[in-house]
Image (cartoon, rainbow over all chains, first blue to last red; front, side, top):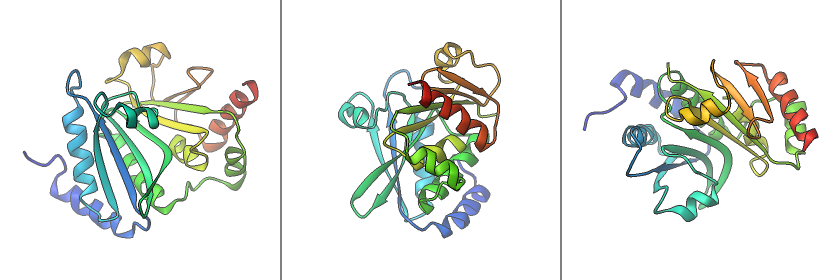
Length: 147
Length: 68
């Protein structure tokens, strides 16, 4: 199977990932039926993960691994979760992708990995203060297209 | 992605999902998505259309949180 990412992109990402500080763990959720983009998304996630030893990935099936899916409230395939890894502890960062992060979304995907690894949102202190103090659940769904 | 960065500040309370609209068309239609990006907060309690700065998205979140 040929790579999804060409050599030039791979080289650029590998260089950018040279600055990764803390480990990031990817959780991929696919399903066998009715998921046109599952194979490509899984391959993309695996290729990106292979470009740094600070990254790891676990592949799950939404139906067979329903316990993990409900633990992370994951209900869509293909889906990718970016989590923090500190030793053996995986911590949810609240970051989800539903659908293949290709085209324009691919740079968001890479940028999110960098921020997750830095453990730093880059947001202003006022924003951080408000968000940290939230006691009600907030679910943000950002609809995007790859072009 | 801004929404993802906001989730990082409080993952227990905030989940941010980037949803590819062409793969999930019923969900996009349910929220009346025409232009992207389009952010639906708490299942459409509020909508933010377009790429907006941090302050705008924060204000929308604040309104939704105050209404819960």
